[in-house]
Every structure is written in structure tokens, then in C-alpha cells.
Amino acid sequence: MRIAVSTDSGSGISQKESKELGISVVPMPFRIDGKEYFEDINLSREEFFEMLKKDCEIATSQPSPEDVMKLWDALLQENDAVVHVPLTSGLSGAAQTALMLSEEEKYAGKVFVSDSRGVSVTQRQHCIFAKRLSAEGKTPEEIRDILNQNAERNSIFIAVDSLKYLKRGGRITPMAAAIGTLLHIKPVLTIVRGGKLDSYTKVRTQKMAKEAIISGLWEDLRKKHGDPDGSHCYLAVAYTDNPEQAEQFASELSESFPKRLNPKIVVEPLSLLISCHIGQNGLGAALIEEL
Image 1 (cartoon, rainbow, N blue to C red):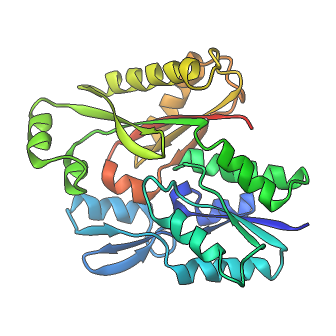
Image 2 (cartoon, rainbow, N blue to C red):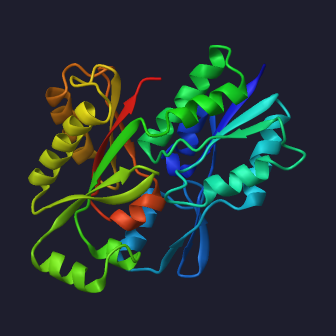
């Protein structure tokens, strides 16, 4: 049975990488100063962060139903079924929309939508899991169910360099942002149960932020994953606009977690959908349990 895997750009998978991985990506749309852009189609990361610095008015959205169906229609011309892995339902309506579309008569029994509660590198890894499960002979129903059953088996922590963009997106109040800025507070965020973004801790320096992320990962390995040495988990790094900083952090994590499942630590950019709330110099790390 030929099974295609699709996702959205919340996964951080670029159009170039989608071809390499064999995973189709529907881009997330943006409106910037009233003009529509699509991540990695007519808007590069460099252009996006320049607009962010200029305080352009940026609004994010989920992919349109038409764009999702167009992708599925193309995939079903060459495949028997599609497994779609959207951005966590805790941060976007993309999962609910895709699930609703998959129930239409033309897609019933052909398109299977998971809600793996993933974002960025965790969502990306679940797409890779879906490809592997297909190669192992799993049916699309089984793949969807396995992803859903393991939806909470990942951890992600993201350090925010400035409170400016969280304030702009309505994630914190202007007063909290003003006090936080005055005190040089840098929040470290995490994805909590249900796939929603929440505060993990607050620090004052980039060094402390990285230490907090490492501490959070170790804590989750013990309490959440039951894997005290990390030997059953993949480790990944995500960033907004500073790849050199991310690579350096990956080296630090490599030393901190010597028994991780895979020696290679994946380093990937956060999707622009998430980056617009994080801003410049955002840095994160994630654990994803092996299925």
C-alpha cells in the first residue's frame, strides 16, 4: 500500500527538506502589513526577521482548507492514502480543520489525521516516524493511532530573549512585559500536556536560559519519560534566527546527554508561526521518545 505523509510548515520542514525527506508540506500563511505571504514560498526567514525588527504588523493563520485539499488531491493521484501530521491543536486550529476535511466523502478512508501534539522538531520527528511505520507495513489507520497514542511522549523547552513579541501576540500583559524588560527577565517556555505553550521558568541571562533548558530536559527524562539516562529518546535543537548559537548549544547538549538514543542531534529552525511570538535569538531543545 502506498502511503504519503504530509504536514504543515509548523513542523519547520522547509520545501527543500520536504523533497529530501519525502514529506509534503503545506505552508502556513502570514499577513504582513496587509499583504499575504507563505512561509518558505514567497517569504524567506531572513526577510521575515527583517520585517519583525521593523515592527511590521504580522498576523498568522492556519493553512486554508483549499490549500490542504489541493495537496491531498495531488498526493492521492499517486498514493492510496495520506497520513497528515499538523501542528499541535494546542496552538492552532489546523489539526481540527484537517480532521474535519478528512471526514468528507472524497477523503473518507483515504486521509488520516493525527494530533501528535507536536511543534517544530517534535512535529518533524513524528512525520519521520510516520514514514518509517509505513515502510514497516503499518496501515494508515495504525500509523495515525500510534502517533496519537504517543502524543504526549515528547518535551520541548524554548528560551525567549525578549518579552516584546509575547506582549505583541497577547501572550502576556503590557505591564508584565514592562516589568520583565526592566528586570531583564528571559522566560523559558515549554509545551505542556495538551500541546499548549506555557511558562517553565524565568532567568536573566542566556547562559542561565540554556542551563534551565538542560535542567528541564533531565527532569522530564526522569519524571515524564521514565528514561533517566536518555537512551530511549532523540534530542533536537530548535532556533529562530541564530543557527551558530544553535549549533553551539547542540555541542553543549552532546556533552550533557552522552547516552542519548542517536548520536546526531538534529538542529532545525522553528517555524515562522512560532518564531513571530519568540523573536530574535530564540533557542530551544526537545526530547522525542522512540516509538
